[in-house]
Length: 325
Ligand code: SF4
Image (tube, rainbow, N blue to C red; front, side):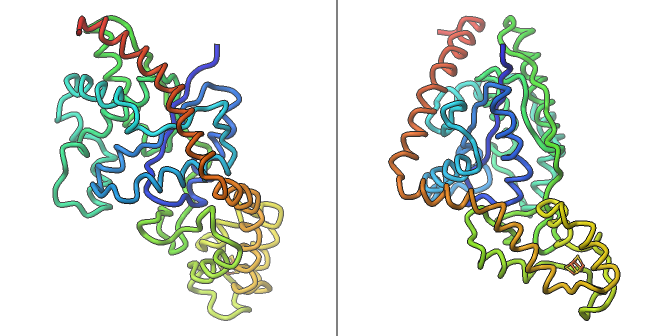
């Protein structure tokens, strides 16, 4: 029997190449091997921003990006968290099984507080790993594809599953993290994180001209001032993109940069073209989907219908085990 994977993202805006290499390519690869559920985590988006104005439009846009990148919604249901009340109920029940002290120790939370410069936390933000546990365990996820920074959350999910099973009888598996192979892409500005909120991204929907314009702003080796100056590619953002999107030429580019034979202007143009080539099929598919928004809404409705059957079944098991209702 195939194992089950739950993966999701917050619908906070258009996806970028960091999402592609850090998650989407991996999800596409895994969809033949596992039962996948793809969650549009719109409740999670509210933990850091309660404004719901763009949430639905962003959710539809995320469906477009996912499908354009190769997620097959027939194989893997795509659905919105807020359409599935079972997520909220299981979150509530799980919140009785973990202490606030345990959640306060979550290192990812500490990072977020620092990165977002928060001077206080809403209750839902502290508890978002508990909601994430409900997201995963509602579908009895065995595997969760994550980056290193998310591993502590999977440990919380395992602890909650174990506590529930010990108290009420075995209902849930203890899911394992599956680390994505490729590390994060750095942002155009050299920030370790490519992020829309920082404004240092190349979006999946960017046309070649936009990619080229953004690439002009990318941080290079500060010691390579003139075209013929020898450079240090390992400190250059553009070179890190060549390593990911232009593997065939990467050793020539290193040699050209180090000897001064290659200038940054040409190097950036070349890198922009290679990224545009990789994104071309995604962009074309995106345009096709954008022209048929009714189909995109149908993908969500179908995904919600299929996911709801599983979610309700799990909640029936939970009610029976807990002798509720
Ligand atoms: S030549 Fe290319 S790799 Fe070298 S510093 Fe300039 S942009 Fe970076």
